Figure 1 (cartoon, rainbow, N blue to C red):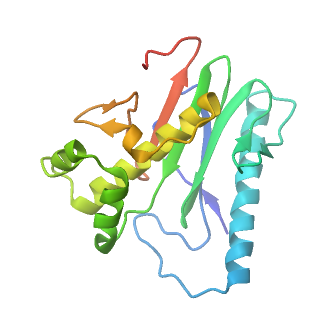
Figure 2 (tube, rainbow, N blue to C red):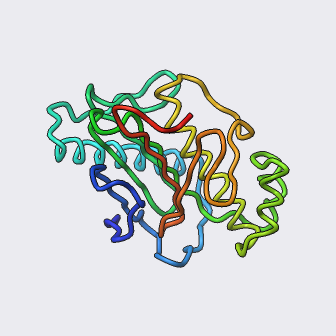
Length: 208
């Protein structure tokens, strides 16, 4: 049975959010995975999708929205009711949903990722890191898999925040993280559940 987590994303208090621990998850420990069939994996993905929409509906209602259904665009991105913005993310262990009024925030992006395995760090680094980010990785007191995971997740949250505004899918090399803030308008903060977040306030943003 899924349960609500006491750990949440580091978001502005005006943003309603919910983090749900999925069946089989264990805070602080990754439960061993059993082999599943293709049909079982499809049913699991559909169950998580439905749960995400249900959480979004509850948060929209809490914020006063009459419309609580979240549609899906042709590119599978969520279509939020008029006057509201939001973001949904999930891993094998948790589901996160964040919703806010558009009068308060132009867009929201959240992302949660499992810490990548050491054997895949080179592949992830090649995908999402610039040379300066690699230099930063080697200079901070964070182990390699954790840094690579945070870099990937920070950029994912940034892109999810920008896409509803720009209608463009960005490449990982279009944003860069430095020590304390990210160039190309990206900033990130690591949450207690390993997630990264970004939200753009209204009516104006100080991001360039």
